[in-house]
Image 1 (cartoon, one colour):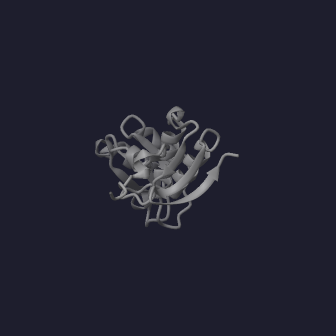
Image 2 (cartoon, helix red, strand yellow; image 1 turned 135 degrees about the vertical axis):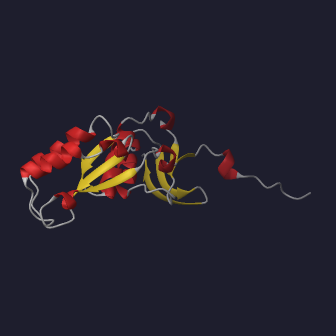
Length: 168
């Protein structure tokens, strides 16, 4: 009689956590205010306010928006704040920065509100290699949130994980 093949991974108490599962739906939009500046460099308050007032904000409905300026212009803080005020009732989230910074802020909210009770005293594998733009910062935030409660934390897949932390 041959030995039966046993799937030890399936029978283990390992819990796999995939940050991609928490990726929220919604368009990510990079809003570059360079086009609203005189010659792409000078912010003229009156013109800027007029453009903000006349802009079709509905295109940002339920979107995640990163406000940026791709030129070397010096943008006063109130300009980003003004755009944020227009976007607040429409967009899901607004930040000043790039799209990676936007994803980091989105995941910071998700991880902050993540119920970790199901991971208590368990060996956890944080799955890597996602198809969605999960920022590296999200993995660090998640590992730090799980460290006080997890039995162990690994990164990768069950068949080839890298140990990161083991409670003593």
